[in-house]
View (cartoon, rainbow, N blue to C red):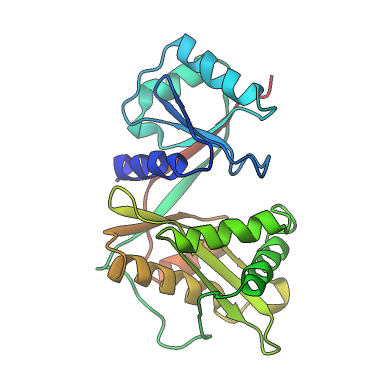
Length: 250
């Protein structure tokens, strides 16, 4: 599964508006944002980059005034992991990723109604809801709403749940499948609406869509704490491997 997730990450970054490939790495750049969570790189599975390859990677980030940063599964590219460490990259975090398959998916029998956004207002409202859900870590923006729409229009899926007054209470997105799998991300609920089963509902519906309508053999995600992990496990996600975030700050 590590290799599937790594191949997915490679394809996902190649879909960025301005991707670059150099020395066994794919760098996914989006000129509309400086966010390190969008502008990052990943090694090709099995890549064995040289010191010069890593230097070229760093230079590509520096010339764009971005922090060199990577996300990858180290078991799928162990030589790349070693080369990055030798070049001074440090581990920002390591996350266990969870995987859902058709055999493990468990859609809740009851819960809030889940729908797909259809209008610009829907995408803007969902972007605002996710910005609030994540405490401003990903500020609300027109570009953020546009990225959500682009996800939905390029083979992925976006889902939301509304509050009683019609505003968006929470939602999530799933990227288009690649290498037989798809990444589910951005699961967030506004604080005032937590505890209603929104995260479980949108996660299960997105996984169902990818597995039964878009041809994915699996869906994977990362979690931010034990509470969210329990939510994901209830709808069929199981621990499978580790992803590493690495960066160079000097």
